[in-house]
Length: 179
View 1 (tube, rainbow, N blue to C red):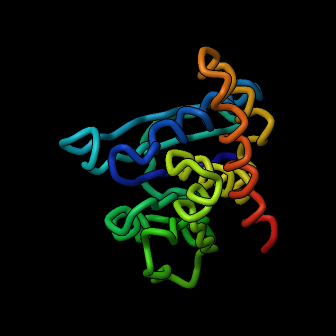
View 2: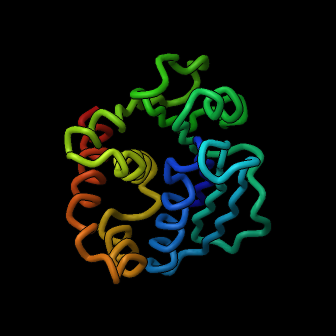
């Protein structure tokens, strides 16, 4: 199975980290992976997206034209990437910042109030991890356990971050699994 995922939002929302963690988790599961970042004019506040491919087969190119899943952390990202999503694809919308629903009825939409959940957890910086939990649960591209292993390795010098990020991932996954 090949998962082609586009994750997009404002710079500073942690979009690149979500992609890196999924890619790293895929590597830990001995899958073929590709991660390609794309930044807007500013690191913080400008638009940012990344393309993640996780596959059981070799990956021919890192370019995604018809993603199997799209994560939209803000409205400009939803407007830009929803039309490219393939029929039957998965659309994760950060409903804390996006009131608009999907325009298409041929995709599976998950509305995840990631900023609200992050606020409940006491740290707005984990909003991306809530969404990461949702995309992991919706696609089954990698396991939560592999993502947490990847997180622990990437943030080995900051072990205090592990607990709250794991809670955020679990909350996002629970939203999807509860549907």
